[in-house]
Structures are given as C-alpha cells and as structure tokens.
Length: 426
View (cartoon, one colour):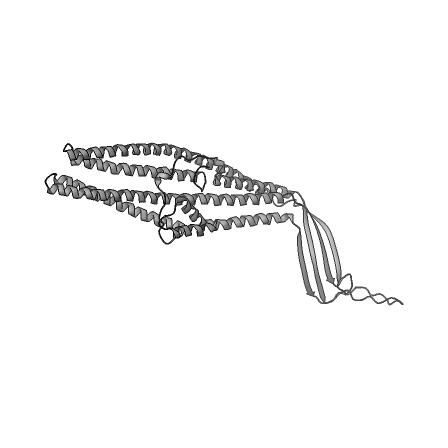
C-alpha cells in the first residue's frame, strides 16, 4: 500500500498541469493516512495475540542453571562402626550446589485452548474489518472534498466566462446609452449583472481554495493539487450489494464470534488438563555423592479446578452477555444501513429528476436568450427581456452543475454505505 505514494506523487510532479483525478487522490490519501498506519499496528497486535494463543499447542522447553552456596553442610545422622574391608561413609553434602539442565513439558489435554485460538482469530478479523471501515470513511471524505472542489472550480469557470460576456454587454449598453439608443436602466442592469457574477466568481474561488487546501492535507502535499475530470463524467447509478459484507457488520459479527468462543472455552476450563513433562540435568552433589552427574526425571500431572469462587461462571456470563449485545448491535447497524440506502435511492431519483429539469431549462433558456436578443436588435424587444434571459441562463447553468455535483456526491455516499473504497460497480 505505501508504494502507491511514490508513483502518484511522480505523476503529479511530472505533469502538474494535467491534475490528479478522483481515484488517484483517494489511493494517495489512503496510502499515507496516519490513522490507517496506526490501525495497521492494531492489526499487527491482533495477529500477535493469535500467534500467542496458538502457542498453547506447542511444547515448552526451558534451560535452567543454578549455583547455591549453603552452610552448614548436612551429614548423615548415624555413625556406623568401622568394619574390616568396608570404606567409611563419605560426606553426602557440600557447601557448593550446582544444577544445569533442560526441562520439557507438553499439555496433552486442554479442551479450552482451541476456543481461545478461534476467539483470537475472530478478534484479528474484527481488526481487519475496522481497517476496511476506516478506509471507506477516509475514501468518502476525500471524494467529498474532491467533488466539492471540482464543483467550485466549474462554478468559477462558468462565472468567469459569464463575467467576460457581461462586461462586454455592459460596454455595449454604455455605448448605446451614450448614443441615446437605450436608457440608463439598461446600463444599471448590466452593471448589476457584472457585480453579481463577480461576487459569485469570488465565492467560488474562495470555496475552491478551501477545498484544495483540504485535499492537499489528505494527500500530504504542500502545493495545492490541480484537479482532473468533470462532474459530467462522475456519478450515475450505483449497484447496491450485500450489506452483510459491510466492514462494520463484519466487525461486529467477528467480535460476537470471539465472545462466544471465549464463553465456550471458559466453560471447558472445568474439565481437567493433562500435562507430561521430563527433564535431564547435571547435578552436584548427586545421589548422596560429592560428584557431578546426570539426573533424569519424567512425569505426568493432572490439574482439576474444582472450585474457583464462581469466577469461571461469572466470566462465562460476561462473554455470553457481550455476544448477545454485539448481535443486537449488528442488527441495529444493518437497519441503519438499510435506511441509508433507502434515503440515497430516494435522493438519487430526486437528483436525476432535477438534472433532467435543469438540462431542459438550460436548452429552453438558451433559445429564449437568442430570441430576446434578436427581438432587441429588431426593435421588437426590450433590454429587460434580454437581462431576464441572461439571468435565467446563468441560473440554469448553475442548477445543472449543482445537480451533477449532488449526483456525484450520492455515488460517493453509496460507496461509503457499502463500505467500499474503489469506485465503479461491484
């Protein structure tokens, strides 16, 4: 994942005029996001806990070495008379005591460790789902910022082009007023339109600057990124998938499984555990002799916790209650996602209708403006008709851009609801 930062940065640096498109911006932001880097460490912690749980299936081997100086020296409490042909009984203890050896052990029977491993694996899956959910949320934030910046950029471009045209019309109106062809009302109307469009242009530039700064923060860049693409090419219907695959739903399901496994494993802790062990050591003194020699041991042990003050039963109840709570939370999350989808689908229909209406209005307003200008040139129309048509055209263009922006934003929101990062159909 981090390798994406270099090629994306290289593309932007190599061709700054071409700009960065929305998907490249999302991938670059995901590749360098500090929150996702921190979440990756949480995944590593969960994976380490799974490995720690699996280690219960492996034997234990330890090396031990000790030296002990002890006084007084122990002697046998009996004295035997010296007999012909028999050596006297030597000392059996010394001030110095040395022990070096290996000890191995293995738990043969433990019916709870398998459930502990499965619980750790479920917790690891929950962390992975959390990462996916955070990636989807970050992708939505980047897409929303990119689309808002693109909308402001296109509004600015429309306003800029309209300002140039309005300034030309203002100069024409002033010339017509000086020639006595038209009155001061037409000049005032033209000035009002120029001022209104200039204010709209400044607002759009301010919004564009704000969203580009925010986008640069997501990308980790000092310079403001230029944008590639258009609202016209974005958005469209989104194919809705299975909500059970949503990262948050999968996270809650994984945590529920972990709680169930922990409860089952804790119940089985009542069953005795069986372990075998063996050791090989060098010991001094050894076998009632002042010598360094081998000592071998082997054995089996059975542990049966008969009564623990109801601790096990209490912990089982805790895990079962957690599992039930997580199941209800999962149901609630699914209901919330379904409501979000219903809302998005309804808004999608509304936006599509608004877009069609804006396109039709734009076409009709263009026709109206041509007719009004032609009528004015022929002396059959008024400056007010032209001014009204021009205002209607500006509003129609802005309405279409707003509908395109809302359609694209709905597409991004649908991706977030499904917990997806990449655009397009699933």
